[in-house]
Length: 315
Image (cartoon, rainbow, N blue to C red; front, side):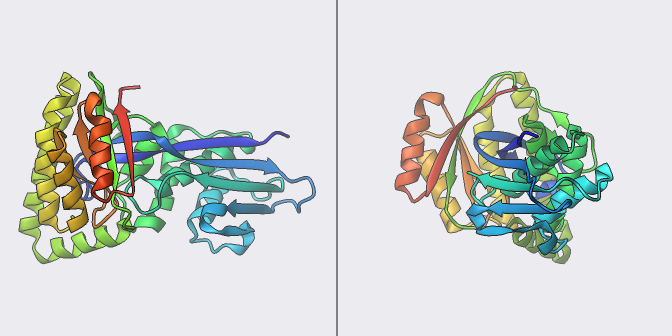
């Protein structure tokens, strides 16, 4: 029996982070320059039903049976087994690798889940549909993030730009004109669950103020969709600047993020904002393709631990 391999890209949120948790629209796109990979191999010498799991990047080398049910890797595996009604699969080994930085806003947790779900369902001879993969990955996201919006598992599963609203059918975004984004990583780990929880507590204390911020972010996301579909991506720059200002007011930016945003704008970016949960992680800058390397270098000189230039296309 051959090995089964599946991979999944990273992602960035262009518009609408945090507000998306409260029913507002958001736009996210895949980042194919980074990815998670899962490889499943049969183990002829193993005990039926056993699975040896290795994830070198996080120092994990154990068996599925020894992981608690609430461990994200165990949840991804058990979700597939339950969905397919398999109680004792062939003995196998699962190896997980990833080039996606953890807790940086690039969707590392969701990408690992999607890769595992796809590789395991193929190994079992019953590949799951995109919808099933996304649903299972969303259940794992709850362990990572507490109250996730569902946007990470959606954009990573479909590997296409998406316009997303919670509890609404996924909409693949039509990108009429490609555009270039430079991602700058602060190097500061920022677990999404903490930032989302903090915003929820602030919203509960002052719902009127925060609802106004969420409404404004949702309006920007809708304008951004129209701009992208109309083929005028340069106009996204001003919308990114406005969205960043709202995220600052929500309390999820940081001095490091604000500094990189300012540096990007000064280095010719058309607009820039934090991306994801905030408090660390990544920022993004809209750039002319010819200026991508210059903006990336400016960000690196300003303290970004890594940069990625990615082109956003419809396919």
